[in-house]
Image (cartoon, rainbow, N blue to C red; front, side, top):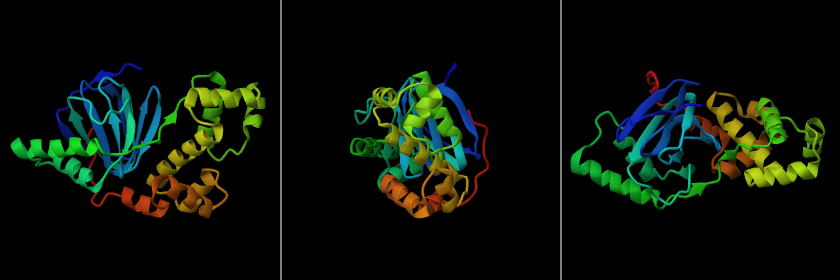
Length: 257
């Protein structure tokens, strides 16, 4: 990974086509990345975040990252010269209706300038000091055995093998793997697998898959169980989420830069 340094200015709108990637890069400033439509997968060396339209990700200065769109996505970024909110690293944040409108205004084609812009930026900073940080990161384990399990589940999130069964495949006891998962991800194995499945569900829904298909692909017993888990995690149903991901008016994608 050889990230490039980007400095695209104070704010911008970058339309991305389905599955379009923005390669590894970092910024000299802190950045708030917000998909007003579509779903954005944000990856760093420490893990992955899948960000739906009612969420944003805070990326500190100097943290190398890459983006991938799922569904036609409108990526809006606002840059800050100093830390805001006391976040210790990359973080997924809840976006209030007011913060959403400010981000959209700052990244519009005819964005305000001068005093009006400074006023909006001050309100954005105030909102960021109040927003809730959400536990939506999927940490990437370092241990080779855990990485093998993570790779197997990435290939098939519906894989229902227990940790003991995975242990027999990778040559480690269930107790050892359980201890390693907690040490390296700060999650139990069931928590990590649930997080991975929910992230995969966000991607599939943005791709246009039905709720029934997503439930099956992510290993849930049925649509009802999936809908309940999804609503507990994201505060909305999969159907409402899928509708929110669809852009109101398609926007042609520009080359990512």
